[in-house]
Amino acid sequence: MSPTAPAADQDLLRALAPQVLAALLRRHTGAFDACEDAVQEALLAAAEQWPREGRPANPRGWLVTVASRRLVDLVRADRARREREERLFLATPQSELLGRPADADPDADRDDSLALLFLCCHPALTAPSRIALTLRAVGGLSTAQIAAAFLVPEATMAQRISRAKQAIRSSGLPFALPAPAEADGRLREVLQVLYLVFNEGYTSTAGGDLTAPRLSDEAIRLTKLLHRLLPRDAEVMGLLALMLLTDARRPARTGPNGELVPLAEQDRTRWDAAAVAEGTALVERALPAGRVGPYQLQAAIAALHDEAPDVAATDWPQILALYDLLLRVAPGPVPALNRAVALAEVRGPAAALAELDVLSAELDRHHRYHAVRAELLSRTGDTPAAATAFHRAAALAPTLPERRYLTERAHTLPR
Image 1 (cartoon, rainbow, N blue to C red):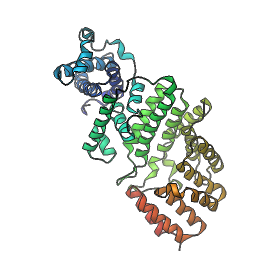
Image 2 (cartoon, rainbow, N blue to C red; image 1 turned 45 degrees about the vertical axis):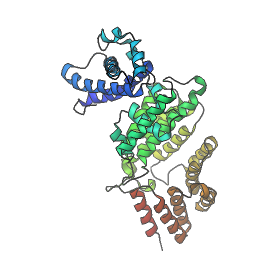
Image 3 (cartoon, rainbow, N blue to C red; image 1 turned 120 degrees about the vertical axis):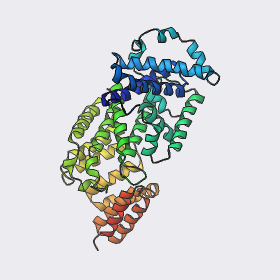
Image 4 (cartoon, rainbow, N blue to C red; image 1 turned 120 degrees about the horizontal axis):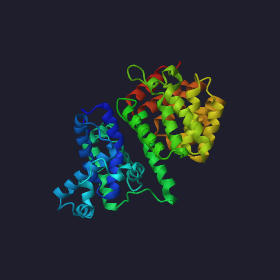
């Protein structure tokens, strides 16, 4: 997509890109590479022509038709290597593509973005491949942008995306919405991929920065797209609410030099009030809408944090009750660790430390486990043990801001 196109055109093209790719894939399942190349050429053509000639009456239809023409050209130019794709096109009534105005395709009104999301998040692909392909095909990010966000070489990310496309091509994964019997499970895969992208943006797993805002923004944008496609799904609402309520704290989460500012010390007036209001409204609609799921519960917990003027005023008993429910719905060591934090506020650090002992085997390599344990030990007055735990947490922390913060905490404990 050309960076010289007006901002309004760039935003529109980015929003339409997955819809156009999905429209082509619906006709030519298995030709993922060729379809994506054709869409990229159509986007470039639009970025060049629209500012000069004016935006067409039906931008989406224009892009679908131009991309289809480009795809025909690609297939013809690569006949020997793409025999299967050419046969598909020769069977297509091309006069419909070539003989009518570019924005008059009736199929252009069909939005297959949801089917594209399901294809990119298919369980047959590895988790890294699902994330990379989703950001490339649905998010419209370049390979270089995705590689930079995940702090890997561009060649590595290109190979990852290429392998994902190859897996789709060789396995014959259908470009279609899953059958109703498997739709719910497949939707969980989509939600998980979007949440992984968000988490990587909100708390990076490597590097010198605590956050990668571009990834968080993209995850929120894609989840809003999913919410538009499935407006009554309570877990989609819950995930979007969770992202908004969590991301609202990002402005206060780091200091002027990128240093970590823990939740208890954040200036809450810097939190994004509009995002808090939007997230709270979503979770209030989601909770009564159907079966309560883990994203709704986590969003409800986030809302309680965001509504409190400070840590002392937080409704910790209700948060503890929500964690108890969350552990019944989605048991796991990480929600159990978070529950221990709430338990400490309700019943004191000694009770929480006893809960942490149960988790030691599963979370011994997780820096946050040792950080939480260190804070609780410091509250009991066991300074030597707290210092040891802070150093252990710092050694395991994935980013420089976290390592620096935890090391400083170890050195500033009362003697």
